[in-house]
Amino acid sequence: MPEIEETLLPGVGVRHEFRSESGDRVSVVTHRGGRREIAMYDRRDPDACTGVIHLSIDETRLLADLLGATHVGETARVVEQEIEGLGIDWVTVPPESTYAGATIGDGAFRTRTGVSIVAVLRDGTTIPAPGPDQVFDAGDVLVAVGTPDGLEQLRSLLAS
Amino acid sequence: MNVLAIAGADAATAFVEIGCVALVLAALSRLAGRLTISAIPLYLLAGLSVGDGGIARLQVSSEFIELVAEIGVLLLLLTLGLEYSAEELRHGLRTGVPTGTVDALANFVPGFAVGLAVGWELEAAVLLGGVTWVSSSGIVSKVLTELDRLGNRETPAILNLLVIEDLAMAVFLPVAAALALGSDAFSTARTVGIALVAVGVILLIALRLGDRLSSVLEPGGDESLLLAVFGLTLLVGGIAQHFQVSAAIGAFLVGLALSGPVQERAAALIEPLRDLFAAVFFLFFGFQIHPADLAGGLAVASVLLVLGGAGKLASGWFAAARAGVARPGRIRAGVTLMARGEFSVVIASLGAGLASGHQLAAVTAAFVLLTAVVGPIAARRAGAVPLATRSP
Image (cartoon, rainbow over all chains, first blue to last red; front, side, top):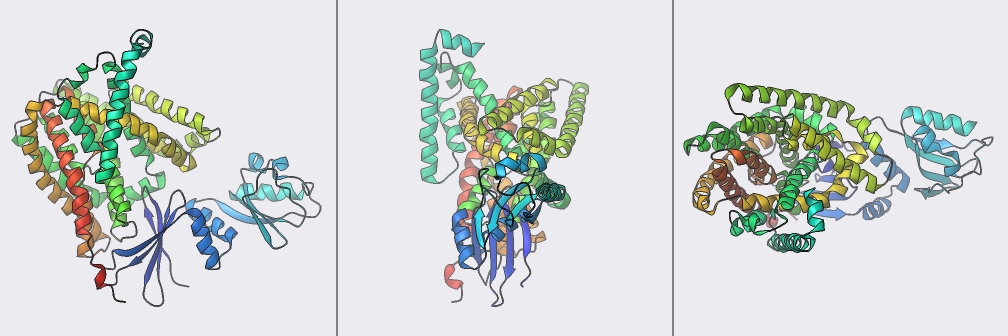
């Protein structure tokens, strides 16, 4: 794995860059809103980019999919890199859970623990960005984002 | 009260007048877009061309327009404060003191010295130093985006310098405002002292408790957030003004205090409102310039263009060199930073009450006009890396 260098761009977002095996430097600028730019550099003047590709959020996902990353992993990494003190966890709904068959809204998890459920994984399929009326069942995996404490609370709520 | 009175009696005239002002601004903004330059110089020019007392031609709405212009300053400063997260500010403070110092010396001194050389009082010279000191973060970030330079190695150095200038303004603005207001040495020293303490306290609260304030504002829809941020800005600005700390600084610190998702949402919500009010502010600033001062202003501004341009070249060069950037990138950084804009006009507007206030306004308008047009063009040329040199 090449080493990734991270640079803050105040007022704009973050830039990540790495050098490929073939010697090209590649950098990705992530704007605050989630837009991306992929930049390539001039070999004679390595400080200046020669080509920039502008991608919307959807196009970024598309490109990530084409490059072989999964949707959920992509979202998770974005969250992790942007906010310090925020964790992501994959929580399996236990068979004995009282919330099995309930909707996300029924559990009021966000209100009670501050944790957001960003995806539901079921039988190898992904339900991204589920709404409050999304039903989940025992055995489903909830991808949750929140503080370490909040994630712990979510685990014990689901086990109750 | 005034506004209510207008609504009763002369509402029709007021609507026509305000409508015309807004339409003129719209046409100018469109023209600026077509010329791919910042609209600020055009607003100033429009105000100028109507001339001194242009506002008086508006029969009923002049006081309303003046109030709108003042709110425009608050919103300008609010959005400047909103631009950076607390993390970016801390990072800037940790790493940017040397570059910030070079930048301050190389760009404050020319304005200050020229101000004294043309025989202005000390206060006006200090304000002119401020005018030449700060780059326009609006123009600079727009140029970087438009020229696709966000990926360039010198870009973080440029952006960090803008952060430091922003922070430096949190100290400079209240001091300058106190200087401009003070009558004798003792009362000036006292107001400067009060201003510094107040800013220190608010800044500390902003950086410490900003998260809590943000989480209080977070729930609820966009409408309530917009109203809350707008209200908070005017309230804190008003209180700051009360303690002679300049309302603008209060607004700026509100922007600094907001963080996280609230910061981003508020920035997006306030932006259209800011554009509306700030355009009126720039126009209004242009109104206040005496046509008689203009020729002299242009001459002084041309000198400042050279000195201030060299100053920014020096600070950009230094900042980029520290980031390990080679020569072409250092030049790009310096040239990109040349544009002055919104902050310079705000600083000059503080000196409206000074004896040289009118000349200061004229010089500033001409200086902003020159740098805001020349800066981006120069930046474009400085970055012309011949594509043919790239090996296949």
